[in-house]
Length: 182
Image 1 (spheres, rainbow, N blue to C red):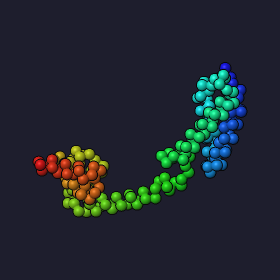
Image 2: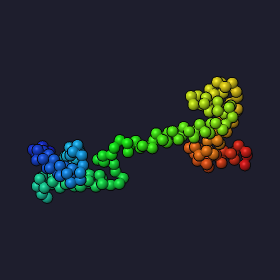
Image 3: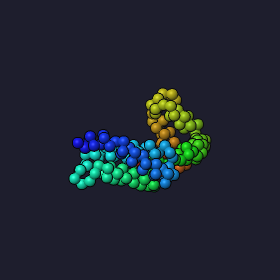
Image 4: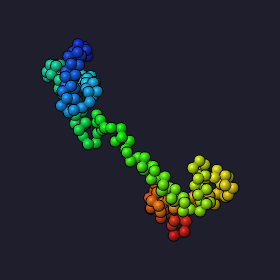
């Protein structure tokens, strides 16, 4: 029975959701594209809740108005919430971050600075590790694994001291203690 009531009143419910969505878009200065999204969210919520309708408690129209109004209120709260980005229109530059290219440039400069302070062998190991595993690096450079792993340890120390370690300074201290036997 409820499904037939829902189907018969779909046009009225759709109109109700459209009017509410248009009002919210206008009041809150949202993009006009948001109107259709709000409308669909409200109708979807009405469909989800249609089984809870009890004709003894009120008319279908009152029930549908309350469900639509409550869903719209929830959506507006979510829009205005600091934690939610839903319905926010921000320029693409803000989403990507203008500082992103500068961060990459700074990182590249920092890596170059660290590599410049290393021995030629350690620089070769670092450059070889870009495209190869440690074992493949031993084969490329014609040295033992132990030699490459010692160079990797020196690289980690150099990058950590420069503040470029993903593990932070604690990791370098732990690895230095382990290598010195402390």
